[in-house]
Image 1 (tube, rainbow, N blue to C red):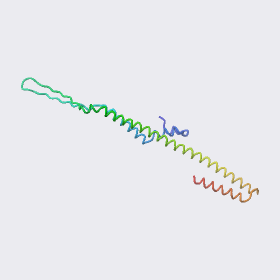
Image 2 (cartoon, rainbow, N blue to C red):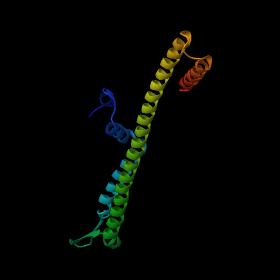
Image 3 (cartoon, helix red, strand yellow):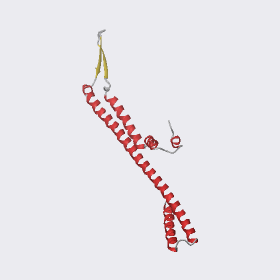
Image 4 (cartoon, rainbow, N blue to C red):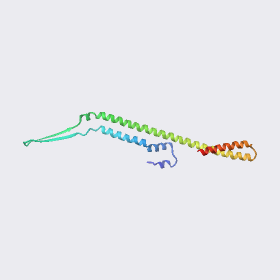
Length: 172
């Protein structure tokens, strides 16, 4: 099996994120355990109760002996096997559907979180590019002002935009 470290060596894809989440989700593991219990209950529902064995040996005064053996199976137990199996089969189907439902929930939650991560990463890259552009604009505006090519108001506006960009960067 692949370890998480192996999956993360060259970054992570959406599918790998889902695989990791499904393999390590505690709620999903509990649902799988419930499925195992339901399957065992289905097997047990098809079994008859253990029969009751009893026996008697009767010694009479003569040399004759009487042996009696008795095997008793509860008739109600025999008659309810199909019903018990049907109930257990329904329980197994419910457990199977719970696995499906929980797996889809985990997969969708993981995909949603991964897409939010990608969106945040792209937004951060855009912000970084914006900050770089504002810094370059500030430097250019400063050089233009030093050369006497722009008025002081344009320098102040560039300084304000640069300050806003730096405050935005500090908030990240």
